Image 1 (cartoon, one colour):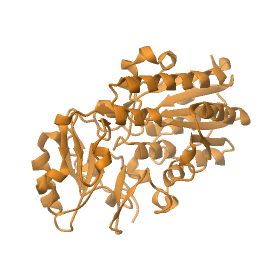
Image 2: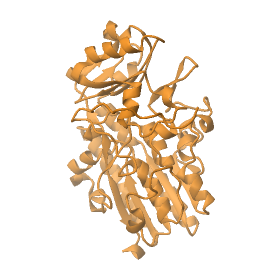
Image 3: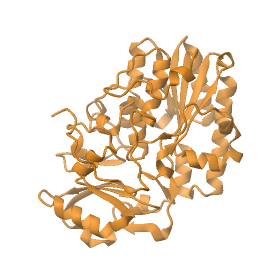
Image 4: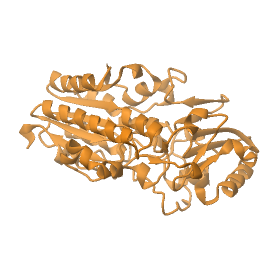
Length: 399
């Protein structure tokens, strides 16, 4: 069954959580705007092709590179401007943007690549239930099951650019070539694997100069990993930001005269202290009637045993209290946090959705030992997680 789920009356989000404004100023709007500026007639349903007015900002550009730095929240970047002078020197053509919901890498990368909200493209979490198959899918570890072309059926902006005669290239880690997530997010682009930051810089610039018109995407994952392991308030995180600032400087130094560079991110992140961590495995009431807990520590999907949905929702609301916004699936869909949700993908959302407030994280020590050891997280709808930059650098001929 296809078509969007009929909206109901949206329940209010608490004041510290925010709904992404899809079609206004989100990550979903970046690639459609860049492609539109290159002359592509981008189709994205009811959403406008270029709400960020990138056609004006990129006027004259025949080649556009979009560089996504994983984990680079706008507030974090502003707070560390002294170690990132290249970032600080770039223009801000449309102000800050919002990541999608959940504010996590697989959701964001497919949102960028398709130009659509998560409820339309169907990659709705870091880990999601595979409806009817009694298993979950970790989108980062995804190979070819489920088939990426079936799990994510929407056409990407890269495909639309190729159809318009514009060469589309995606440059990212060599190990990601051919993965399910790569295929779902970048389908239509020629994927070129990079083995280092220097290699990525060379590959991005090479793709920009290879054809008269080009749309090139580059992905840098290391800042996010550093933040997760060491924390965003760490010397390691600041040192990694300095290195990435140098990568951006190298791209700018080699930018063709008629090219432009857009820099953005997939989400921000925040450190989570020990006192705001709740181990779900230590709360037996939260297990009653539950078939599977998916998502990640700040954005949980809870799938109930058939018939237990209401009881599970009540228990999770009671136990989590004001530590999270807890909603049933229909309530979460009606709130608009995922954008319009296609009926074909709605079941991937939990019967219960729990989005962390403040610095809370809901770990699962026995089931997910690795995530529980991290220092920083993202996934929810706080400004620290949602607010991402959009920065612009121009080649010499563009002023």
